[in-house]
Image 1 (spheres, rainbow, N blue to C red):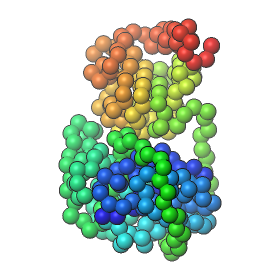
Image 2: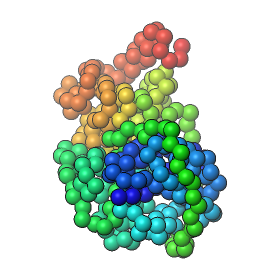
Image 3: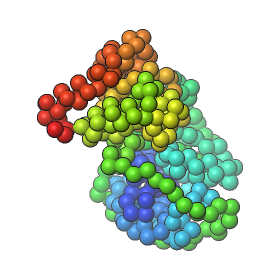
Image 4: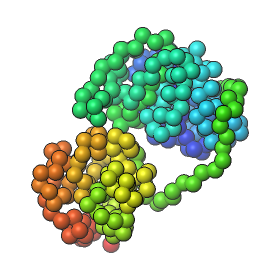
Length: 317
């Protein structure tokens, strides 16, 4: 059962989500091939070839794939798909954009955000905002799967897969690249950060995020996250959002300040190794999943926590 993994990359480096998706693909029990669609992506292809368990890296290069638009990449995967029993991609914004198109074009049902591989045709996935785990068995000839990468470990290094060029597929001609505006930050990327400091609606303003959340995050070398309520209120950009309709994260340490812990938010962070919550409402649902909870005023406690961390020699002085 050969599986094809769509790599996530920036034409320079391979994203960690790809490594974890390779782990999921290897659990299917057959050879694993990785597809690199991009332009000038030789370094990303070489990184993919070094992942343990990868047998072959397929490289499709050219201007058509420079920005990895969903429509041409989906067409490429559909062209290659008959040689594979499964096509997998990380359940990221990119993977969620591309693979549903692939499933539709192949006329199969997509299996979304798998948490485990129980067999070559059987998987588990979360439903009801993560409150229940569903076991899915697929009879489709080609299985189209997105992987919740927080549930899988990185593939080991040490592989030496062959790198092979493949021809581009015909351009569907339904989309074109215009431009992009990317937020830039020296902080870690949210989905791969080991420590995350998140704020909720209780912060009350974007200024308070700058005053209370960001300094604490910088002291810890952490990424900054937010609840949907804080994003909807305009306190922070939507790429900060953690939750069912935002990003799913599983850092080593997750600090939630002023977040009540609605079920939609918990769905995106409850797999964190250690959860610390600060909230003035002792009945807040966040305390049900927190390893450490502190009832109190975040505007007083966040600066005190930062000062104590620095006094202990952690982070910036």
